[in-house]
Amino acid sequence: MNFIEIGADEDEEFTTGQTGDSIKQQMHHISEAVSRLVVLDDTTDFQMISALYVAPSTSIIQHLELGSSKLYVFGMIRIIAALPTLISLACEVDEPVLDTMTSSESTNLSSLHAKHYPLSSNFRALYVPYKTDISGNVIANVAMIIAVLCPNLVHVHIGPELRREFSREVAWSTYNRPFKPYANTFRHLMYKD
Image 1 (cartoon, one colour):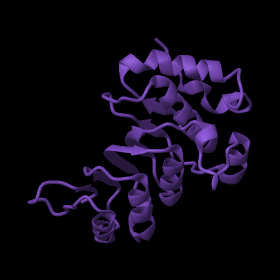
Image 2: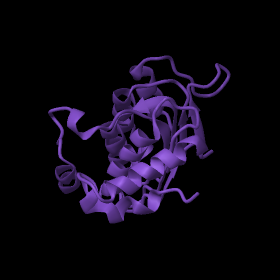
Image 3: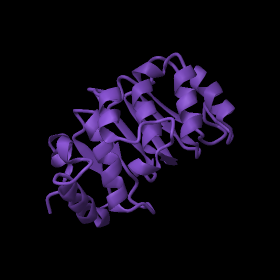
C-alpha cells in the first residue's frame, strides 16, 4: 500500500480527531512504503509540521495533500524541508507577504535564499484548490517564494479564473523588487492563455 488517508471515515484504517497529537500518533504508524499521504482533517501548519518531523517513515513521502488546511509560506518551507523526496504539495495557501513574516524569520527574500537554497531539488508542483478565497496575486507570491528556493518547481495548479491574475503578478514581479533578481527561477510559472 503506497497511499494513506488520515482523517477518513471511522471504518478506514487511519482516523484522527482534530488535535495535533492524534495526527502525530497516526504518523508514527505509517508504513515506510507510503509515498502519497492525504490528510483530510483541517490542521494548522504547526500541527502538520511537528507531525512530519516526529514520524520516522515520512522521509519517503512524494505527494502530500492537505485538503483545506491553509499553510503560510514558512509552513510550506518547513514541510518541504522535512520531506526531502516531496514532489508535490496540495494545500490552501495563506498570505505570504514578506513584510509580515514573523520576527524570528528573515524578512528579506535574499536572506531567505541565502539560508534555504536549494530547499529541495525534488519539489516540482504546488496544487491550490479551485475553490479558494485567496487571490491569484497571493498565490503567485507564494509560488515565487517557493520557486526561488526550489529550483525545479515547474507547475502551480490553480483554478482557471485565477490564472490571468496569477500570471500578471508573476510578469510584474520579473521586473520589480524583491523578486526581480530571481526572475529566471519563476518566470516559467506563468500561464499562457
